[in-house]
Length: 86
Image 1: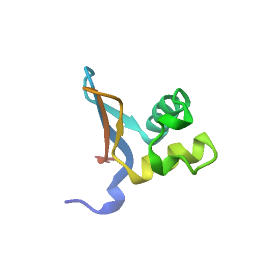
Image 2: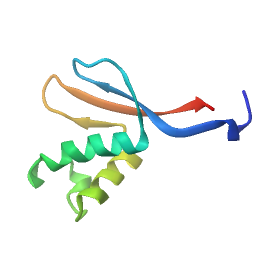
Image 3: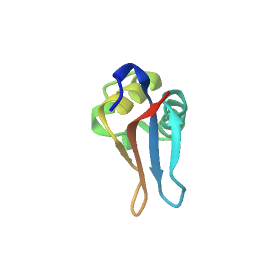
Image 4: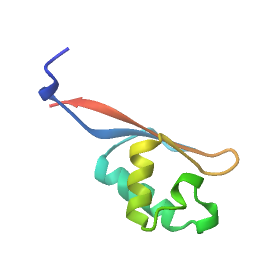
C-alpha cells in the first residue's frame, strides 16, 4: 500500500434503494443528507439527532457518527468512507 499522503478520505460510496452505487464527495454527501433531514419532522429524526439545534449540526453528526439512515420499510440509505488514490 502507498504512503497515506497519496490518498484522500473525503469520498464516500453511497448505497440507496433502487439506485446505482454512487461515489460522492463529503460535500455532496452532506448536501444529500441535509436535504433528507430538512424534509423530516423533528419527531421523525433519529433519537441522537433530536437534541441538536441546527440542521447543519444534525447533518454533520450523522455523517461523522453513522453509516446509514432509516428511510422506512423496505428502503435504505448507507454510506461508507473510501480512499481514492490521487
